Structures are given as C-alpha cells and as structure tokens.
Image 1 (cartoon, rainbow, N blue to C red):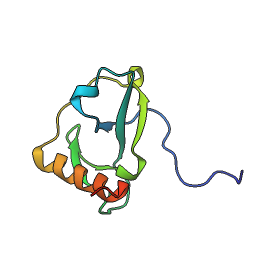
Image 2: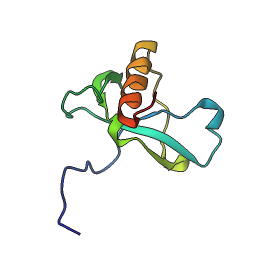
Image 3: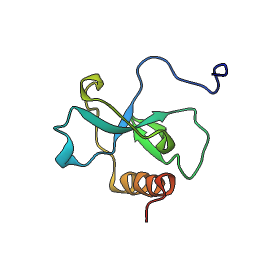
Image 4: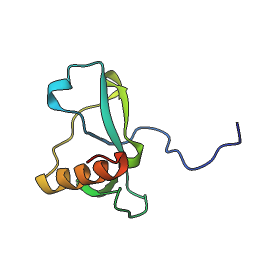
Length: 95
C-alpha cells in the first residue's frame, strides 16, 4: 500500500451516535466522529459539543465497539440532529 495519506487524529475525541435508540443494546454503535478543525462542507454540519462549535464528520460514519465509548456528555438540538441527518442522506445517497 502507498504511504500514509491524510490526517488522522490520535487520542480520544468526541463522536455523535447516529444509531437508532432501539439498537443501542448491540455490541457496536454507529457514530460520526467530530473535529474542531475540519473544513466547512455540506457533509460537515456544525453542532455544539462540550460547549464548543464542532464539525460532525458525516463522511466518516462507522461502527465502533460500544465498550470504547466514554461518558455521554450531552444531547444535540433538534436542528443539529436534522443537519446531521441531511448530511448522512447526502453522504450515503439515501432517498
């Protein structure tokens, strides 16, 4: 494989759980990671996370082991959730 490309943040970071509540008992959880330094894009909606404006990286949606998640730090607003949903529809090409 070619050498390393792109930027990967090391260490702990916040994520937004985008999985249906009815499926939260599974061993994996579907999340979108976040970044405070990502570029603005239609697939990077902004949300306030830990009292800071944060980009939700919807193109990096993926499953993680539920045991790897830390404490829940809060909830998103209805508008933030709608923006994330719209971005996921775009990224995943959903109807």
